[in-house]
Length: 338
Image (cartoon, rainbow, N blue to C red):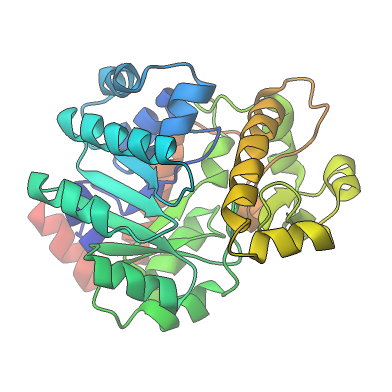
């Protein structure tokens, strides 16, 4: 296939990232996407806290399933020094185990760039608007992952088109994150000018993902209007499937919590409290086969997801759509190169 900046930076065949998901990034899913020609991103807390691996052991488990490139997600903003030291140690271990692609989220990723760049690794930074993209540029990141309002997890506020226009002139590759659940949408995002696509929700509905069957079934049955944003889990908007449980939970934090989240002296404590609570709730609800809590993260790409499919089949179909979507001259050059 033709290269894009993402395929060159990550050493992959198809400009497709299986985004890090708590708690859904189990080793089998990460490895399956990488083996198929995209890149799976391991999530350290999922790997250790949810799926029970010592971190190095977990990476080696993934390596036993694929020899192709894998990436690592580094959540870099935290009020806990213990967590910061642990993340630093995780990155060191990942480098020792051959990981050369990192996705950073939150905070300023300059220290991650300084840490991994001497090893030839590349860093792509999650952004939701231009001001965060500029911090990434100042930090020396090698690419941007533009998280739009159609994403699952913590979405941004811009449409895919508006966000690309906002950050596309900064001289870095830009990856579309949010709203891509079909092969056609994948090709459209690349035609729009993105250098790659990151997907999460589509890969939950796979046999490789350890998410519960009720969770996967909810994704298959949902439409994009069934996705709501709630602040009640982490203190900031999270995209979830609307269920009786999430509707009863509510969408906004209370006035006291909002004040504490904004106050300089209390916001870090509040974020830590929400983080601990959300880790437990997400782990319990996402893996619970009874489906009793019905708290499931997902993006608006649910509208195009109608069956549980192997990760490799998804990657294959999306790759075919990309090849067919390119102009005939580009396809001819690509064929000749093979």
